[in-house]
Length: 361
Image (cartoon, rainbow, N blue to C red; front, side, top):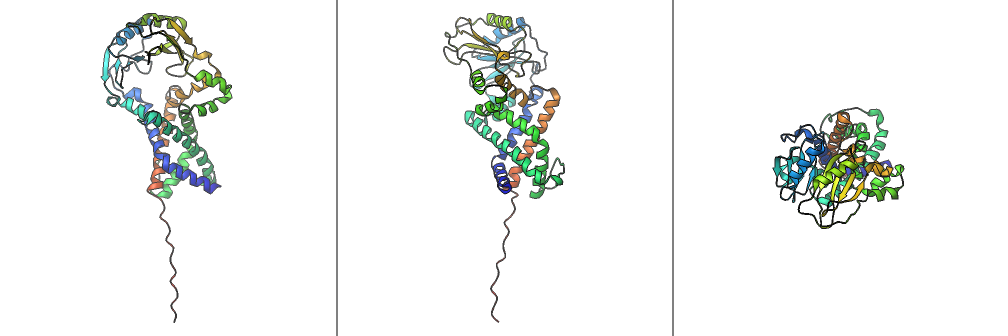
């Protein structure tokens, strides 16, 4: 049984280890994106008053082709304006353009994010990442079981003693058991965001699965065609009236005719950086179609909404970010060395000596 488990662990690592290594590296880089984006104004303090946000919104949404805004927050002091075909811009909190791009390839933080979430392949890439996440979960569990047999020889090394297969395997085994708890958190929370059935299984202890599934389904609303000049001031004022303590996070225009204008907000008690408190406005008249309080969602849905903040270090301050950095670097080392040792440092087959027949004397 242990021999079979060891074989599965090695072969799966050799085949999927590189994907996990790249996920660990790109995820670690994204933990610090707010520090290296380097656009003037990114460190500006947040101005949360309604008048400033309304003026900036009207100014930005009046630009030709504008489709939505990701508002500034305490970590990143610029609004992000979205156009079509991957184009966008950063704008100051007064609505002045600070940087603009015609494609995501012009902004490292955007294409690294796309790689980490989609492998540059959209939904197909998400499936690959999700499968890699399930394999990673198997690695952590099977690796802990296999380590137990050799626990008495444990030695903590940040790097293999030499680049030989035995040293790499020894390092892989011992660094893996140290990083296992953090890897488990990173892998489980990341896979939850891709495979909904897996996520429902994880949050099942918090409430009925059917109730959670219904709460996580995006609501559908029907309205009129988008007006030539939507009344953003009235929409934002109504949202502030209903949720006075919430931050405005994402404003989105309809994707197709009949869809509403949507506004996502974050209440202080929410962990999710962009919140799940939402309001839907009729695109033609600006009337409120629905309002959804994230804090009133079932417990299972609220538990699910905590997965991304934990995964991306949006909570816990620098302490948790450093721990996730250790997790990401450990995944990079474990995945890359697994591939290296499996494909390039495999033991050579032992040549058996062929016995020559004895000569008759």
